[in-house]
Length: 419
Figure 1 (cartoon, rainbow, N blue to C red):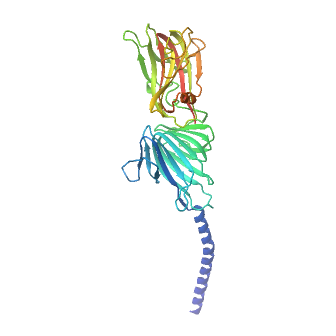
Figure 2 (cartoon, rainbow, N blue to C red; figure 1 turned 135 degrees about the vertical axis):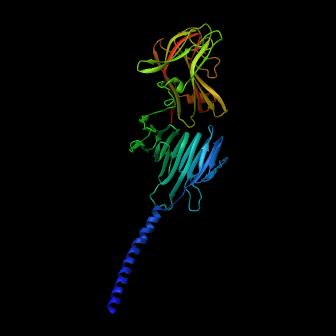
């Protein structure tokens, strides 16, 4: 009996010793893990700027219209109307929930947007090496401009889109999300994109861009983003998929023809007309692409003039065999304004300036008839602002021929924005 008691005592003593060792090691390790990994929420603020911005809280079918600076909680869903603008900002908070002076991350939303704030956390203790972490789910974004700062601690943002996940480190980025694709570009910084088709990871650095679709990831390109690249700006798709034909002429005369034809290895658009009075023949497309926040705006086109009458662009400067017309929404005046550029081949006595256009353009003479002319505009932003136009979005683009008789072609058109 005494022997069994002695054995139990030794077992209890040994277990107590092991427990003591475990506690002496486990408690500091657990405390260390807690200090390094425990998190608290970031303070999220929404600042509506224009038009209608709504919020839908989890489990609610009601969309509340937001009018001023508003605190946003995780899983809130935000929607912006087509002409809306809003800033979404993340701030680090102190233990007493006082927000810092400068935001860690800023997202500027312009135009139609559908976004859900998934989560936003930061380490609770300064000794932790974990970054600030934010996750957004973007179902739609006409124009989202993201700035990841972070401050003393690094910040990391995860964008979840219908076509893939994008991981962002410190830098500046632009993303456009539609049902068909995600267009993503890096201004500064570095982003990692998981290719949904192959599962591979792609790293994008400054001035690089790509797109995500159901088919996977597109090629990496460098430089400006072409608004018309996915809108049949090269005319390789059937014309009617994106463009609408417009003609105008006196009742007794033809308005001319628009034909999509093969031009060597590429397709081109041909405008033709023979008449005695003035008419217009062209194609137009609704764009409605928000461009607020872009650094530059240029137009590039490849055109050809085969025939024209009258010479130059007529007595008022409006009858050019090729004319480009882009309309903008003017942010300052809440109106629609235009940019026009004409091209002609036949010289004459008429002045090439467009007298009656809102945009008093000097039309450009191409080298000769029947030869392709590659046009690239200067940066339009300072030119527009010099006429008190602050462009908020590109509404429409129209390519047309004007005059009595004309034959002209275009095989590429691009609207380039610098991020």
